[in-house]
Image 1 (cartoon, rainbow, N blue to C red):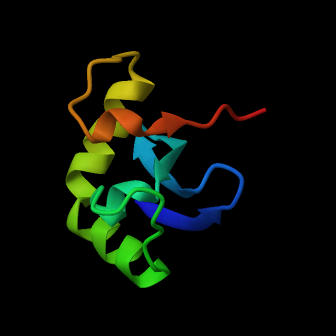
Image 2: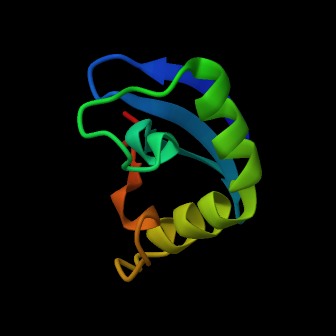
Length: 86
């Protein structure tokens, strides 16, 4: 998984994961890294990157399920969305 930075508009981190030999881009909401502790709070970049690294396998699994057409993800990973490439 490669983190491509923060998407300001969606308040998410753009990540790229290899799924079946193809690069799949997804948005991981930054609020997941905040842990839902304070509504409206933003985690620091450091906190977000640490959280993403700690949850790498779960994030990759969620993105793979989405790429394969499964919409049945467990919270909080059900908030991850795929980016449609043009």
